Every structure is written in structure tokens, then in C-alpha cells.
Length: 69
Image: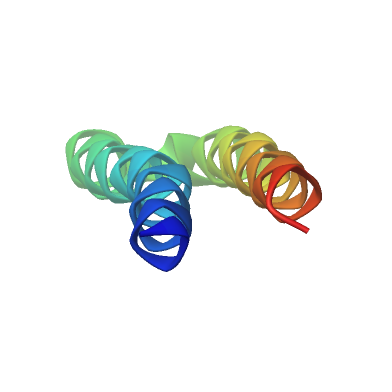
């Protein structure tokens, strides 16, 4: 039973940031399509958003590993 709990928590910890990456990527592509001259600023904002989403995922996974160790 504990293995299923760990699997479900890890799934939730990775599904959230993955959804954020997908939404941010879609919005960045849409923004560049509308205004190609703003692509450097859009790229910078996209990279920062990806960084924070992945940092949240790593922290959540570390918490899950520490809870069920």
C-alpha cells in the first residue's frame, strides 16, 4: 500500500510542473507568432518560468523521498 502512495504522490509532483511547462511553452510560441521582434524578451521569460517550475518539481520530489524513506 505504501508503494502505491509513493507512486501517486510522485505522479502529482511531476504532473503539475509538466502542465506549467506545457502552458508556458504554448504561450511563448503564440507570443512569438504574434510579435517576432519581441522574441528575446519572450525567450527570457519562458526560461525563467521553466526554471521555477522545475525547481518546484525538484523540491516536491525531495519532500516525497524524505517522507517515505
